[in-house]
Image (tube, rainbow, N blue to C red; front, side, top):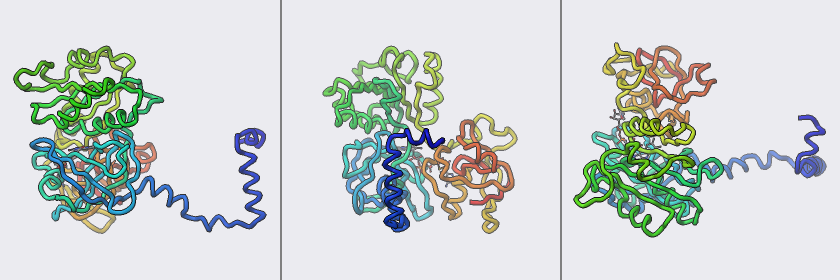
Length: 385
Ligand SMILES: Cc1cc2nc3c(=O)[nH]c(=O)nc-3n(C[C@H](O)[C@H](O)[C@H](O)COP(=O)(O)OP(=O)(O)OC[C@H]3O[C@@H](n4cnc5c(N)ncnc54)[C@H](O)[C@@H]3O)c2cc1C
Ligand code: FES
């Protein structure tokens, strides 16, 4: 920038005066080395040690773990964010992301609400093995699935399925606790009433707060239920949420729900920029994804060589990250959905499948880096971590 322009910047004179003073007094900035990092780390720690303070039974397959810091205070978060919880199941060291369901105004704990996944490694471990008093490590809060008043409409329509309701409870609690001038309309698709997580708390909050609307939509509604039933179709969405013009939509739920809802919203001509969707992990059946080569079944045995040292075999349908964890190699991971790029590795040789929409930086593409959490080995591979 030209000097004349710089001089017009607010604070320019103060900064130059400060630099001159420091030079005269001989201040050595190296003395302060690490100070900024200490502040940043307090707000954005890479690792937080937590203890399970309480476990709350939510539904027949869901529990909330109330997590408190072992030391100090919890870093702040925005409603809608998640943490990556690290676990050692005895068989494997791994991590999984879980949205925080408590309010950011609740400073002393984070709630995460875990739903059992059939054959799921971590959800079953958390629900069956973890008891109050146990300690766990997590990442700091992550993610951008958050309401931003500068960008989003005052009224937001939230479409949830299954455990995808968790970030919305945090958003609703935050809006109420802070008295925000914001309307939230939550449509929650669940199979039956016994599957609807937070059904009672959401019903109560919507009764006493006129800016919160809660509409459960059951596939099999209980007797006497007056609301619509079935899936969250375009018709049901507009019937419950009204005209979607001037509304931002937030969608969170299992993969099958995204495919269905995004199609419904396209029939309503909702522009893509009005739709915010949370990620929900890597595809469990990549061989069903668009672009997966038809000659590969997902069962082929592949050999993976890491850093020129360790070699092991895996299957083409298992993500590179899972394959490495199965063989005792930990890769830094946060989202496990192909978005945060923490799990980047360099592909030196071989071919991987990466589902459509995987977010790779241009520089990663240029220099052969891949996200191991959403990369599936189609051939033998050689990688560098
Ligand atoms: C941003 C975000 C927020 C989330 N928030 C929540 C939440 O609030 N509540 C909630 O309940 N869930 C949440 N999830 C989902 C959660 O992270 C887990 O995916 C879920 O708990 C299932 O984990 P699991 O270990 O039980 O299942 P997994 O064991 O991961 O099973 C899923 C599939 O992954 C494959 N797989 C996994 N590990 C291996 C392995 N080592 N080798 C071979 N194959 C493997 C298997 O094919 C299996 O079918 C969130 C996900 C994301 C991305
Ligand atoms: S862990 Fe986030 S991109 Fe792989």
